[in-house]
Amino acid sequence: AARELGVSEAELVAARVGDGVTRLDTRWKALIEAIPGLGEVMVLTRNEACVHEKVGTFGDIRVSDMGGVTLDPEIDLRLFFSKWAFAFAVEEELASGLRKSIQIFGTDGEAVHKVYLRETSDETVYNVLVRDHLAEVQEAGGLEIIPAAPKEADLPDSEIDREALLERWSKISDVHEFFGMLKDLKAGRIQAFRLAEGSYTKKVPGHAFRRALETARDISLPIMVFVGNKGIIQIHTGAVSNLKPMGPWMNVLDERFNLHLREDMIAESWIVRKPTADGTVTSLEIFDKNGEVIAMMFGARKPGKPELESWRETILQIEKLEAH
Image (cartoon, rainbow, N blue to C red; front, side, top):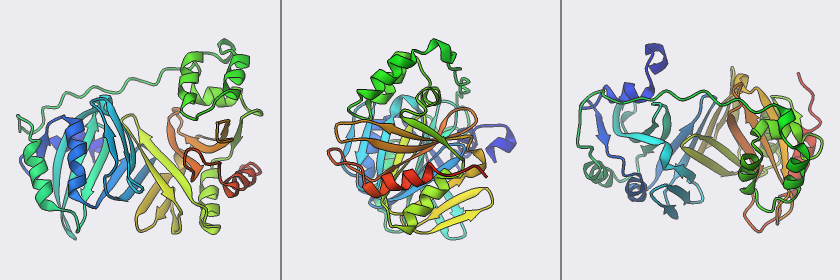
């Protein structure tokens, strides 16, 4: 609806301030630390091509003023507060009744994260949270939206030291070192995959992600599915069971995890292997036409534990896929 009107989603929500919408302040750390009191909620994180929904509780919160993590077994988030700009408490009348939520948006007005109350959530705590986080100004509209800058183009491949890339790659001991390596070598993510193809990466067809989900369902393989945007990453760890393709959408419709993936927006798919202190960690990563990450899939694992052999076998089968 926002796109059809030529405005951002945040502006559309802000237009209803005073009519079921309350603007909240931007004390992000305090806001996140208050959410566990709501009890069980549904959280939603999305980007242009994928929506990730989880039911659970906020627990094991470790945040500073810059961001942090929530490490509940079901609600597993990586938070980047520098990208958060606006927050609202939203009430919507649906056929099923009144739906209440907390909705957070970035400087560009795009949705970052939403927390929806469920029947079992504590509405008294919700009301106190809204009262404690009321923004001083409660006027409809008036948001200062800063359009997102275009993604910077990668340097030409010839300007990336491929030998240094492969050397650094071979010495990774933790998957979190990968981003720093790319930054040091001034390489884009897909660019690095392309330069490392045959050594640590392999390009696969666009339907690889669907096939991996189907295999995980068929053999009850626990996986990790990461979906994010500039302000947050949301993670599902566990099995998947109810897969439903509908037009361009590939859907996971499980009781406590839903995924909605626009397969027609997948421009590139890559298998990526990284050496770590726990052995090789393998991911399946999909990207849109702008080179932005849509989603990533791993075999379920914890630090200190090796990758599941059944996940490695699944990836070996994915590598054999042909385009169709």
